[in-house]
Length: 125
Image 1: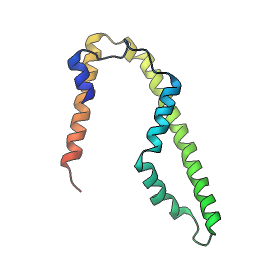
Image 2: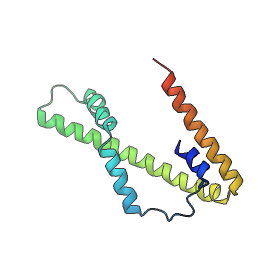
Image 3: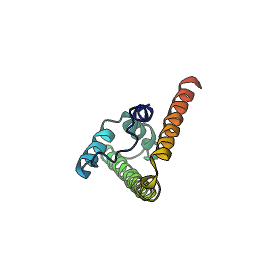
Image 4: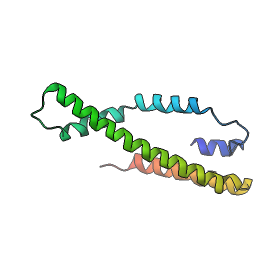
C-alpha cells in the first residue's frame, strides 16, 4: 500500500533522501527481531524436539542455546547473502532506471503486494 501511496505523491525513489546510518539500520533490525513473537514461537515450538529427553535441566538449556546459536548463524549468513545480492542488483539495474520505468516498477510492486494481501485474507484453511 505504501508503494502505491508513494507513486500517487510522486516520490517513487529515495534518491532525494540520504541513506540511513548503518548503526540506525542495525539497531532497528535487532529491535524488530527481539520484539517479533514469531521468532519466540519458532524456538519454543521447533527446537525442543531436537533435545534428548533424558538430559538434565542445565544440559537441556545448553542444548537449546547451541541449537538457537546455530540457527542464528545460518540465518545471518543467508540474510547477509540476500543483502549483498540486493545491493548488487540495485546498483546494476534499478539505479539506472528512468522515471517512467521506475514508476512502472512501483506500480507492479504495489499491485503485487495488494494482490498477495487480498489472496491471504480471502483464503481459508
